[in-house]
Length: 93
Image (tube, rainbow, N blue to C red; front, side):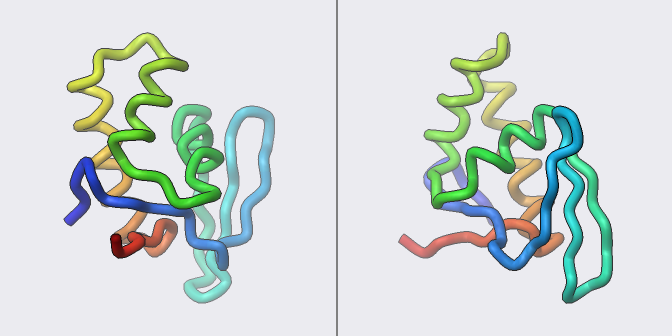
């Protein structure tokens, strides 16, 4: 389970390409395609290197007009879904 102090990064084995402000990804292991909206694509770009969820939330709040509580809840939910799909990796700290 992802928490605000969890450290995540995108799975380096995922093939991804930017299309306008969105990202299209493919998992060669699963043979599945995924698409990310512009906000999700921004998160994808921010997780190229390992990042703590609370730091990610702070970066997103600086960039978007969103309150920190909602941002944290949405980011935790998104990160968990990405982790469950094998698109993110959780880094042990």
